[in-house]
Amino acid sequence: MFNIKAEIIVSPGFTLEENLKMKTSFLFAMFLLFQVAHAGYDRIRINQTGYYPEAPKNAIVVDVPEETGFEIVDESGKIVFSGPLSEEISWDKSGETVRRADFSALKTPGTYRVKAGEFLSWPFEISTDSWRRVAVAIAKSYYLQRASFELEEKYAGPYRRPAGHADTRCVLHPSSGKSGTLNAPGGWYDAGDFGKYVVSAGVTLGNMLSIMEMLPALFPDGCLNIPESGNGLGDLLDEAKYELDWFKYMQDEDGGVFVKITSEKYPDMMFPHLDPLQRNVYGKSTASTLHFAAVMAMAARLYNEFDADWSSDCLKRAEHAWQWAVANDGVIFSNPPGVLSGAYSNRDMEDEFLWAASELFITTNNEKYKDYLAGHQDALKDMAPSGWANVMGLAVTGLAIHSSSLPSGLSSVVKNSLTGWADARLEEMDRSAYRIPEFSLVWGSNGFIGSTGLCLFMHIGLRMIKNICRGRPKSLIIFWERTRRDIVLSPGLDRKR
Ligand SMILES: [Ca+2]
Ligand SMILES: [Ca+2]
Image (cartoon, rainbow, N blue to C red; front, side, top):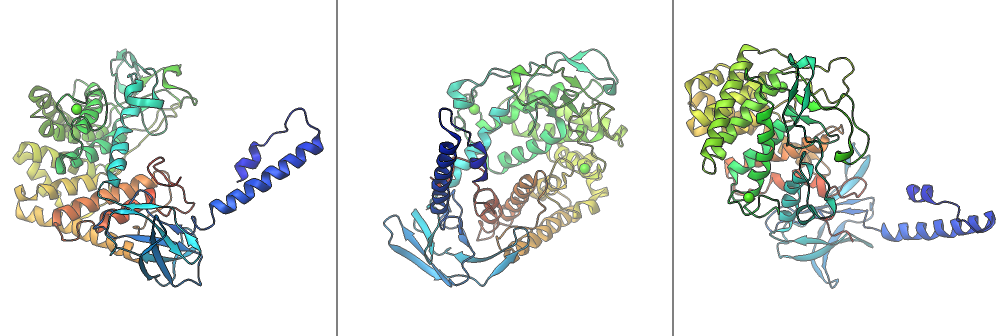
């Protein structure tokens, strides 16, 4: 509303008085529109993407203290379900007091709205495939981040653009210990700039490849409409390979891995092909080298059937990186003076060592890595969802998936670590007004929630408990449902029209 007011300008050709009248009328009309549009839709927060038929289904009803019940109505307005609202629950993050409307028992596919008193929610679906659209859109978003690559309209639609940053002659910064240039095209841009960073990409690849290992049929060939659609390899594996190919350029001859390719400072807001800033390669670190070792070890087993030579090169590089990290176990990267791109300084490397050792052990079954894991297994008790600075979640979930090949002591540590962590999160969800685990509202907090959801998914999948959907929908709601300001964070995928 306030943004609309700010954008109104004096219309030319009218007196100031006429302009003020027009502005007043316009603002009043917008005020009415605002009131109509939010007369209830904002009071009832639902998963606008949809609900699986068998999944738990909750709506959150805000600021209707006099209501004690709710109804679900179909598209014709017919009541198909009714139930009591929960007691009031407060949520300190939003300062709200809410009631939950649990309609898990409604399983019939269709389009519905929640009704509480005079208030209606936006329409929502109960369907077996509504989340499929979200999964495909999220996976496709990586294609749109490709550096050194033209995005053609037939794949990118309105996001088409010329190729940006060839990165064939990136300048080796003195922090790299080398001089000259490095050929390192490809890879994805980072979240907020045109930089290409190994550790933020490493955890992303780790998550992506874990999903592909657990659910290899989830993103089949052709599902993403990317240039590699139709090549016989699943499209998310194609997309991950675009990044893995860039990773290979980042490994130095000694096995160590450079941390990033960026300009000295962040570029202005512009298309990537217009960025005039010089691209530099910065120094190596233990963390970037271990992220590299872990994802290359994963790639070695996941792509073996598709391209055995490429995969064996991945494994060779992973082991070389491990050797460098063991010999250089405390190299912390900090931005050199004058460099203002993301530092991603990673000071505690125990989690990175465990993740790399886990993936190398899973791929090679080599005693060397098993001994390392057994010698450091107490650290695996510190389970946490993974981010660029802490990849313990990837180590624990990776080992849990392959626990049958672990020594029994190590297997128990891993299973107990994951189970204890997951049970605590599920308890937090049950206590939470919005049924989400506890988290801090910081930069990247949606990523933290997403990673929490992924770890819960791994945990739940592994336990193969009957209510397999128990944790998954709850942890995903922050993206599509019940956000404090009724904003949908995956635009175009809701039914808010
Ligand atoms: Ca493909
Ligand atoms: Ca770390």
